[in-house]
Amino acid sequence: MKKFLSTILVAGGVVLLTATFGFAEFTATGASSFPYFQLGCLIVGGLIIISLKQKYQGMYTGEAVGAFALYTVFVALFTSPVIDAIKLIVS
Image 1 (tube, rainbow, N blue to C red):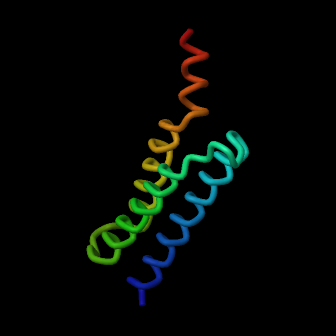
Image 2: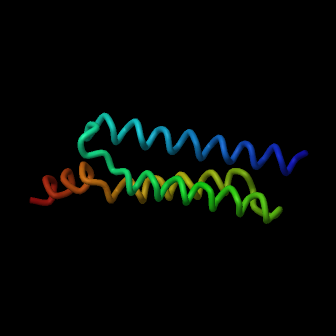
């Protein structure tokens, strides 16, 4: 039961972080230039983290959610609005 509950908590964290990324990108870029590739990468990465949590008992729930949060930030850095903001700051 503990394994099932911790996997459900990781899945909930993955869904919330992915939804937050989608909302932030939609408000920043609009529907015309939404980064569907990055959203797909987040979904696949989330499924991998969930399956790793399911398979390995030694992985803590906080570690899995934290790893996915860092992955979400890393993917968000390579979207058009963030790259444009970095270009604006640098130049």
